[in-house]
Image (cartoon, rainbow, N blue to C red; front, top):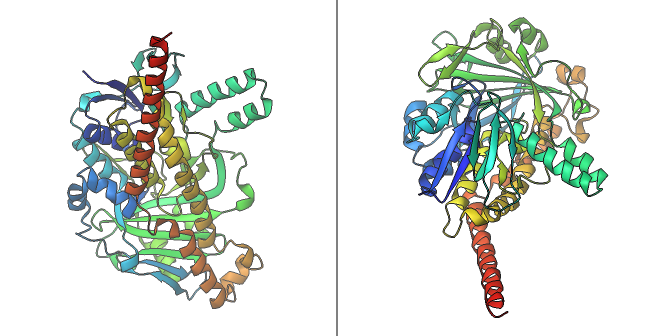
Length: 483
């Protein structure tokens, strides 16, 4: 008999990893995953894991299987190389050395395949279930009813929205919070809560492709993560899938557009010629990647690679990067958000997926603790929010700053125009040295921190809170018995 039931909305990477965490650390919790798609598949960019995230993968026993698929070896060997590249003769201005840069790289489809292979009860994944709304009872133990677009419903004791940046669960949660504030006469707060429902345009546009590497073009790229930097734009490239594929992203940043409404689709097709024209005059390595390499138009289902529909015949797709506004809470009653539903961010530190995994791991560990039961589910959710929200939102802010630095956007570089940068007369090497220092500072949150420390802090707070709650209930019972 399970102690309670969890409904997970979304079978993306975050939702699947949350299910795997429950499977290992909360085996007495029943879960079901509801996914809107009729078929599970993963498209998009490669994923870069750093030590905080890799710890979770090891704890769940997925590391060896992933390493075997991705061919990264026992220890990753990938330096991050930063080049001044928006000129004919580029040069390296900063390197994060191998012993400082542990990175594991995968295609999203590789991760999905391993996650699904390790899910012991695949029948708990329900496809074609597009979330519409939920009804949460006032009572602490009454079941939540979830409504789907096909007219069906499901009940659960805890609802977790892992349904991405356009999260329907976030929309329903914050509509409810907005209504509560308005009913209390708090109009300003209601407007703030309403603004948390839609994601905002970040001012960043990313052009993405996966390039198949072979003997004719493999020399264009080594085993490192290369950051080709220029004024207002940069190109990042790194190998994935045992070095068979090169993940490429060209990033264009306009801070003035941050927070505005993006006109047009979030994701669209784009020709390779447009990319070549955008980087005209850049160093030969960049032009070589864009001209010589032919991208592959592939995603992976659970069984095979299949053509995608969101890219041009050239293999390139254009993404208007949106981000979730800073939320005042990730939880409401017995409803919680994780991953992009809670804190979708720009991709510049390569930790967006990892932050979702940290959410999933910490929340799953908390729910599996002794003393957590149907009647006190809001307590572990409170600890999850207190621990994870500040971390994720800090990382999101730092990620945005990283992207600006990669594109030479900083107060110290305001006088540098794209034309001046292309001429090779700016930024100076001294200024680039300062940029390198700022790049490292904005990433230093990872040094000396681990997700396990965060998790243990949350667990300690949970037991303290449960002890106080239990003591309060015991005292109340004792008083009542003497009345």
